[in-house]
Length: 404
Image (cartoon, rainbow, N blue to C red; front, side, top):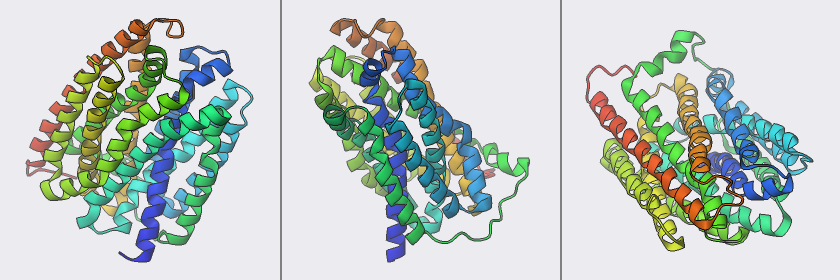
């Protein structure tokens, strides 16, 4: 592989890592933020939701804008905005200030996420798409793992502000790599009409892929909203051990990301998608019955192992056949579905947990465990629903009238 291609992949990988880190590193700090600002669970939840809502609001527009104005240029802008917002989060004097800074951080992350997937086709050949998508899935998992593990250590050493300041130097580094290694923008050819914008959604296989992405993301987000409270309140772990425990599953996912991409290239995305969903289902069922740290960690490993398989296969299926002029738009739609799922997981499934274990700051360990079991029982139903969409997409892909 050419040096510029390697440098470009490093930049895209770091951008994906940062966007993922922006969500997971805030989750591990929720109990500390609740104490620092004397706020309720529902109030500090908005530190996560503000970031996700900002991404959701603009990510499709960001993808479309990249198609029209240049993906490299827009990625550079997003990285600089992300780094500046991390600095604002780190100096926040109040919870409203922190939420506002998180909105800005989410705007930068939206651009980064949309442009990262969109630029894969300009960086590697079609035959290597699956493994690169697996690599990006690995980096997303690494970012997810770094959040609770590194975040837990930073939290215990320097407090919650360090969770956000970490993104400043990493964002500047990614911007420098983009400037040096990513290909210069070419003349854009994307249509600006509304019909062209929504044309990809006429494909039933794409719609199924987007629906599955949303459902699976909701389940994954639940582990990072419910997990800290179960580990700290239910099992009595301190911040550092809680972060390390939460990182076990994502670390497994990170290790499986590239192999999942290779399997997708060799066996095809339909088989790997169904295999990933099946393993996720086993993990969710185990979490719905888990009791104790060992059972929790084993269940989390299963869940995230399945997720890495699903993510590589589903992303490859969605992005492989997209016209070059629409890559940014479809990437934006894919990331939109993912973030809608993350929001649903943080909000709706978080509400299920709050209902099942009321007054979580004073609840007994058994009450918190019951909340975990109920929440992942609902999550299992979401995975079963996603599996039905996987079968439908397979049927749609076998249909000769594919309009993508």
